[in-house]
Length: 311
Image 1 (cartoon, rainbow, N blue to C red):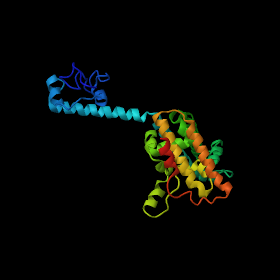
Image 2: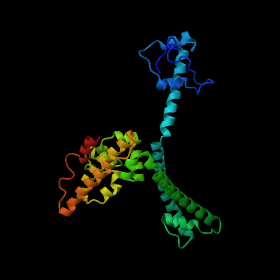
Image 3: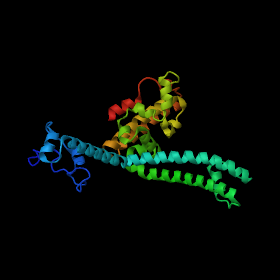
Image 4: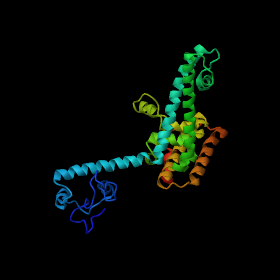
């Protein structure tokens, strides 16, 4: 907010309400001016604050500036955490927590139920079956109750997956269509947000989720990983091993472009999907032609070339 003739003598805080005042929610509050304000050149803001009567002293001015800065930071964090892509991150991480906890409890429930019921089965399905039993006595009630908690966690995991399937297309339409809702959400979570994913090079997107293998490679203890979590995509998983490096690079390149389009424009771009399908058809044609894929994993990146040409 540039100084005007009305407040030129007082500075950016003229008319502003200090944090904690009755007008703390007005557009003229200091934390809003900190976010949106601007000035043509530096000025003696503490001195102007005292002269205008806004602050009792320079120390008082800095105290109020500190409070306003904290308020502005809290508001920025609040808005960021409520963003749609952050909600996807929370949802996919909750899926992992539910799945991990359910599997751990299922082992305990199966061991306990096996000592009480002759036909108890292991795993989530076994826990669901135990949860439907009519217990007889305190110990059976507790074992059945534990199995019911396992079933509830598994059901919550499925419900979260359905939520992601409904939400992801609105947040990242191209990325979701290309990767599927859950993989798209996982890529966003691993990158730290859609904006962060859009800014990453395709080579980084290719190995997201394989950080341990990458660090081992950098330390000289292992070969370079060809792919990370994108291995779960059918284009990589269902491609013959010798062509998976090329498939992973091609997919990562288009996923990177899809994330950029989603973040900066939000419009679906069919050309991205068509180009990926054509590229994958070319890679898979090697197997039909009897190629050995010997040059598919070395040298430059198909994905980087795609990203540079299409960005």
